[in-house]
Image (tube, rainbow, N blue to C red):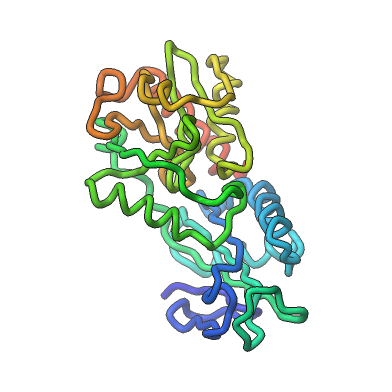
Length: 286
């Protein structure tokens, strides 16, 4: 039985309920975070809480808890659920005031929800052969750096991949690559790792940070800059990264091979570095 937290109460996940007039339900008016847990240790919890604060500030919603209380509650959820490796999801909405009004209510208590699911990483065959992706124009709003619950555009874009038998949709805006529907995207050309810069058009991924840190630590040539759509399509390698997907090679884009159509040498090296980091740092509480 999964245990969740909802507005001050620990209860079975199946029994968690929110009012129909909650603004998260009516408007998608809320923020969320997904925190990977390795060996029952949340990975980079301060960074996740910092990103949460950035989102809450961006949508003008006061953080209902301080970092110490978030840390305590997340630890409680981890302890009460099965699995050494988990994925903790937390969500804050603006709450319910009994009215459907686009403007923010003057006095309302935020809804706070936390749950945990097993952390499932990609099957070995996806790492060994790579995955297929499709592309689409990035039609989302202009504050993609905010991790909000208003995810309909992302859902539609991700479903586009599912409909075509692919794993991810790579997004392009005004001739440049932004990110995936639910991931960050890297390119490799002539041995150089290319990463779109953090800005309002992409979510600042924690795994994105890890990949760049590993590249710097191992002196892999890297450029953080705008990546043109033509560069991405002509890359020797493309990768997708996220807390659940880790680092995955994209070997087909819109039915055409990326590079040789097989996972590249730079990916294999990064994957080895990432797995070593996972065992020595992530499982060690770093």
